[in-house]
Image 1 (cartoon, each protein chain N blue to C red):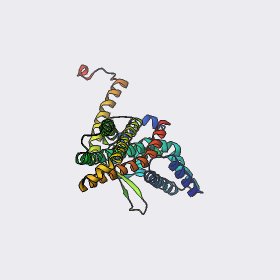
Image 2: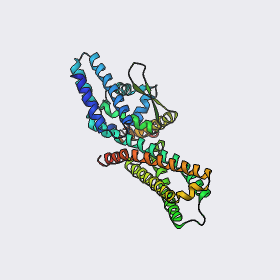
Image 3: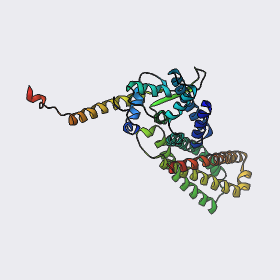
Image 4: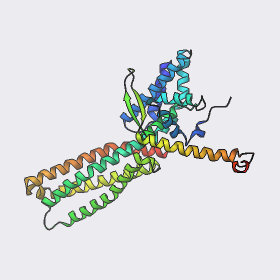
Length: 223
Length: 119
């Protein structure tokens, strides 16, 4: 009976936690360890096993409330990681695409490429400050600036959307100009290939994180 | 005998208390809870779960550092103060002394007049 109490408590906690499976598992392991300590403590004080388990669970409080207390912390970790990934991959993706354009850019530059460039520039100008803000307020900067994680979540979603938009526009432009680019030179084709792979990886990562970020945003809104 | 201090009363002071408890050395979550309870003579008997999110928040801010240990055959997370956390604790102690002195000065004004008047 005692073990079932602990198991049910940890299951309820896990169900209420946002974030990745790994982050949730780490929290559940840590709380499980604390509950085991509490049970041992009560057994040492002469309580029966059932009473010790019941008292331990009561002392830790409602698992739904505990999950809600963890939500801003888990959210901040996820937002920070996502923002950092965008800031770290951005320069690499940017350099690869710029090199592709410089090596293979058809002369004169078609209006469609100019338009794509403007859209990408606007996306970058929006995404970078948002990602910097999200990273700054969710990491060590949190001891200087008190910003609600909901604002950081919105910022990182905007940054990720900007990156996705930029990648999609660049991939679409390349698809239109593929015969010119890939026929130009082997080096150009290789650089363009790397740029495509980098953008695709970023799109896949964005898609994988989108679900978690939306869940986090919902969890933060409902608090 | 006075009642245990409620969680809401401690709100705003919990971070400093946790840093103080970790100043003596690394502890795992339950060790922090016990140290807080023992150090306050049983006055700070919070819902034990609330300590863990607070420790995670302090870790996120770089004030404590958490590592997993497996010494007892069980996975447990151990926390210790970082140099930044130690500096923050010093600042919190100073701020608390000044605050407490100001509150005492208002709540318990000297009845025999100021010290300069009696000398």
